[in-house]
Image (cartoon, rainbow, N blue to C red):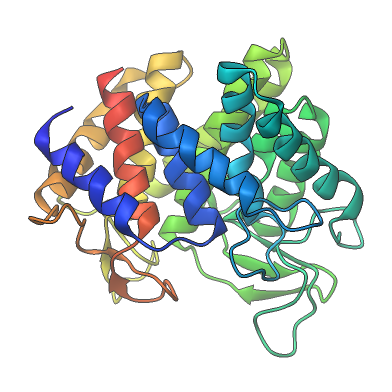
Length: 321
């Protein structure tokens, strides 16, 4: 690893993390091949499991989909070590999703057990969820359920006219909570689809991989018209008043590099990934923190975030592969 990626990884590990942040950071390190880092993170995700099976639930909380982002590394940890501690954690997470998690009236797994927004029901789907939950279902052998969930996200959140996802919808209330084309949300969609495509191919389901590849390329083509001169995006893709965001650019780059490597994204997209990667690399400060990204804790203003760090690590990993 070069010195920049070492600084980015170190800064990422130093950041406080909620369940989805633990999951995406561990997944990034798994994809980078840093066994000495992602294995202990998978271990702690199981140790911090709620009694109902949700992984990495430090301090509890209402989230449903986010803990599942830790699930694949738990499965991979079992495959690597043979330690059933990890497999038991993955199985309990799967049992929670399949048997206990709240669902919308049309059968979609809710993003959370309660609404974080006043006057909306808890029966919500978020674009983020495409990354958090279907990839885990897929690697655990529940590919049909993963596909059902993804089709549901498309039904409720996909804006076919512009080929982008809206952010949040109250499904049972039949109204949008956040009807914006959030760049990071669409980045989560891209990265989630890549992982389900990989699982579908691994499990001999080419028809699922083909369907999801079509969805992925649609969103990729929907994002690229909004790319800025330096290769990044605005936080709200189609808003000129929105700040510049590097997280979504790295999510796009990681997706493109992986898709080219695995043979389902044409090489013509690489120039967009390369430009984005060069620009965001310039935004890594002396501490390894990536600047000019959509920032925690509320993700409505410029700042810093664990997922920005993780997306950069993923882009680096697949670029080198």
